[in-house]
Length: 117
Length: 109
Image (cartoon, rainbow over all chains, first blue to last red; front, side, top):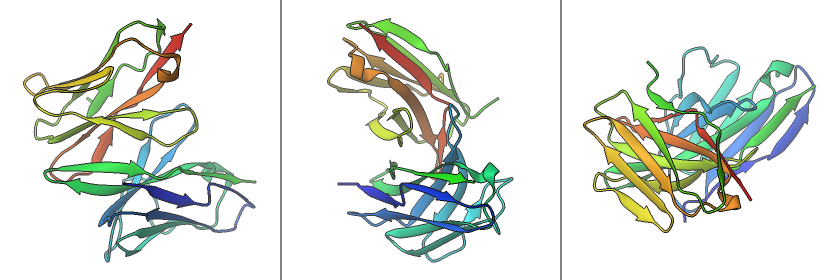
């Protein structure tokens, strides 16, 4: 159990286009999902908290109009990188929160490697 | 001070060695603690949760010291396949996880 999928796994797009990334919890419901980005040899950087049925909460320095997040159901959150530029090239990872009593475990999707040319 | 701190390493150990990592956290209200493993260019995977009483899973032992605000991970009889980055994750009542930068482990023959 506790499987999270992410699609696509890899995408190459031209500068100025938009890219949508999907994150799905396959066998559990997740009221909260998180979106991260990771540059090579660096730690995960939390971008935003995605809550089902409400607006996402963005971390400082993350532009909400550039990284659109929609959490339409308990099993799906999407991240859209709008008007992508080469500096947006990165590894984007989502995680879904699974409640186990008093603790909350994070299960990660396999990540999406975005390359903007 | 960073919320969650780890020694980035790398820890370079021979097969069969025992290696220990520590992770310190600054928020005394933290409630949940985890160790994740991340392989190069892959997503983090949950290795184990860390409970107050300590817990063991095969060659891996995790411990929590609330008084000193640190958690530890001990790996016994290291295997080549243990080579990875080990991430310490802490979350408080809001359950938003905070990640350490990770500790790199390299196990060599």
